Image (cartoon, protein in one colour):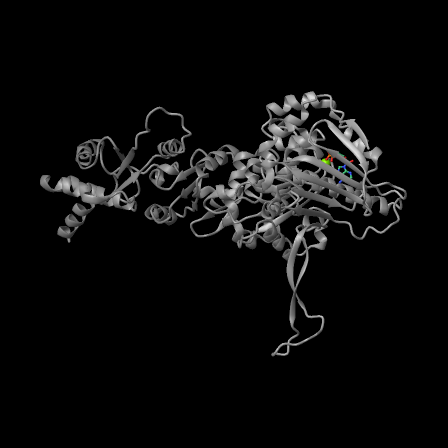
Length: 628
Ligand code: ADP
Ligand code: MG
C-alpha cells in the first residue's frame, strides 16, 4: 500500500468544495456519470482504431445503490486506469488555477458549472461523500487492478484490489447530510435530468416487463400465457434525433422526440428546425415552434442546453436572443463555454456567433415556409405572429429578414406582407403628402361603424391586436418610408387620409359658433373638444374620435413606458359634420327643441363608440321612444 498527498497547491480546496458547492450538490452524479461515459467512449475509439482488440459489447454505465452499506457506485466498463494513470489524472489535479478558482468562485452566480471548468469533476464527489474509492482495472493486457481511497483530506491511499472486469467503479460512502442520495427516487430524478440523452446506456435498477411464457403454455382463451420479468432499466436514449442526420428522420420522429423532451405535453409543436453546424463552431440541435398562447411566460425557457449529450441547463438566455427563448427544444454544443460566468458568456464571441446563427436559421426557415406553401403558412400565422413581432422588435437582423414573410390581415380576412399591403391600398390610401395610411382596428366589433365607413370608401382596414402592437407599429413607421398607421376611430376619414380636394362647408363660421355652446352643454367639456369639419353628407352627423397621438400616449403609459409624471388625460374629439342636413336642422329648430336634438345626435355618436353607458344610455333610450 502506498500513501501520498493529493497535489493541490491550495490546501483548503476540499472545504471549499464541500461548503460552497453544497447547494448544487446533485451535480456530482452528472460529473461521475460523464466521466464513466468518457471512459467508455475512449475505449470505443481505441477499438475502432485497432488499438484494442477485446470485446466491447457490454459497454454501459451502471448506477448501484446499497442502502445498507450507505454507498452509491458508478460503474463503467471503459478504459480503466493504472496506478500511474490514477496518479496522473486524479492525484495531480491540475490546479494551476486553484487560487483563481477560489477567487472566481466567490462571486460567481453560476457555481455549478464552474466545477468542470477547473477539472473538479471527479472531486465533486466529496460534496456528498466522506469517503471515496476508485476500484479500477485498466484496458492493458497485463494491467493490475488498483484501489484508490481518500476520506476528503488531501491524503489518499493506493493499493491492490480484486477486480476482474475491465473498467472503473467509483464508490461513494455518503456523508450524513447526503443520505437523500441513497433514495432510489432521488437518483432516478437526477439521472432523468442530466443523463436522459447520454450516448452510452445508463442502467439504474430494473423494471418489470411482460413476456410470453417460454413454456408456451396457453390460457383459457388460447393466448400464450405472460410472465413478468425483471430487466435492467436503461434510463437514457443514446441516439436522440439531434445526433442523427435530418435526412434519416421522419416528421413522426421529431414529434415523438418532442414528447420525450416534455413528458406530459399533449400539444404538438407547429414545426421544427434541425440545426447542424460545424463551422465556425460545432452546434447541433432541434428547435420547435410551439403554438404560442396568450400567456407567453409559461412557455419560456424550455430550450435545453447540452454539451455532447450531457444536460447542462435549461437557462439559455445568454446563448439565444430573448425572443427565441419562446422556442422549445435542444441545443448541443461542445463549443459553448459552459463553465464560466454569465457575464462572460454574453461577451463571448462564439456565443454571439451562435446566437446570430440561430436567428438567421429561424428567419430562413420561416421565409422558406412562406415561399413553399403560403396558404399553409397563413394558417399557421395566428400562432407565429407574436413570435415574429417579438423578433422584429428585439433583433434588427430578424426584423430585416422578416419583411419577406411577416403578415398583416385585413378585416376581409386576407393576408399581406407590409410591402404588399402598401402596394394594394396604393393611391387610394395615400394622402396629399404622399404618405400611405394604414388604417387598423384593434376590435372589429367595437369599431364596427368606423370599419364600415372606411370600407364604404374603398379603404382596407387591418386587424392589429396584442400587447406588442403599439411598439410594432412604431417600428414599422420607422422601417418603411412614407407609411403611417392610424386607428379607424382616431379621426374622421377625411382627416385620417387628407386628400387635396376641400369640401366647402355648408355652415358659415357664425352658424358654427352659435351651435357650439349647444354641444358643449350636452357633453363633459373637460373630456370632449367640439370641432366642426366639413365632411361629405354621407358621413355621420357627429363622430367621436380619439386622436392617434393621445391614444398611443395612453397605451404607453399603461405599459409603464412613457415616462410622464401624472396621468395622461383622457380626451376625445366631438366632430360635428357641418355638411350634414341633420346638423343644419338644429339651427332651424325651435329654441326649446335645439338642445334635445344636439343631445340625441351626440348620444348616437357615443353609442357607435361604445361609450354610452348607465344613466346616459337609459335616458337615450327613453328619448328615442318618445321620438318614434
Ligand atoms: P475531466 O473529466 O474534466 O477530465 P475529472 O475530474 O472529471 O475531469 O476527471 C479527471 C480525469 O480522471 C479524467 O480526465 C480521466 O482521465 C480520469 N477519470 C475520471 N473518471 C474516470 C473513469 N471512470 N474511468 C477512467 N478514467 C477516469
Ligand atoms: Mg469529468
